[in-house]
Image (cartoon, rainbow, N blue to C red; front, side, top):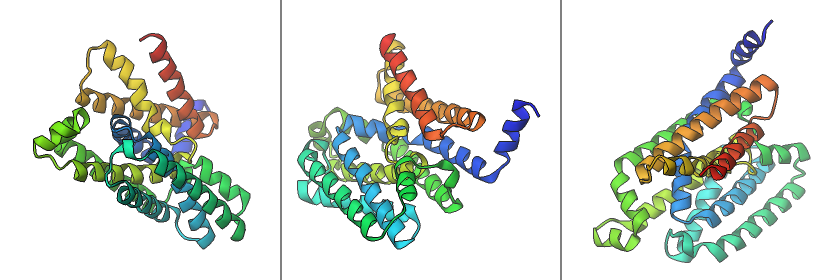
Length: 275
């Protein structure tokens, strides 16, 4: 059996094909949230959400319930708590509060895992993730979230562009800045929760942030500096990285998360060297 026949046989397996579909969808759409994270200065909040999904995962494993609904719920609760405590959905107000929330989330996760006697292997799965372990419910949730995110960006592109440029000018134009900030933060929280199931808590950025950072230098060389170009370029880059990384991982029996992250890192440094 040659390599192509072996690869085709592997992709005929349901877990491998489900993982491929999930990685293709997430790679093509999740970078939209990466643009939001970087343009709205929500990096501190992203770290908080990464710790939030670990807490949600610990709760789910301790209670022996599905992982995804619990992690999304925990992240949404953290987001609403942050908005209530800071009075806005703006990244510049999240720093200290998100740091305290990160520590508290990890402390609670550690206590829950210890008290509930969660196996160490399950804890490691939480940190690294696996696209091969997705259920049809996970893929359905992923597809719905991707569609909602895509429609939100398309239908509200002008408002988003103005918001990225200046919140003050957006408010003077009658744009509901706080509403859009809140919606985008909720989208990011949900995406982080699903991305954790695919890649684990450690490598979420290979789907969110790195495609944006990889695309930006090449777009700049082509004089495509607008937000629309950044959205499109980031999604194309994310899709190509996800598909290429996943196929290589399946063919070479590598972990998909690590393979995609390595490809994204190499592309990022190539862009920086030749910018």
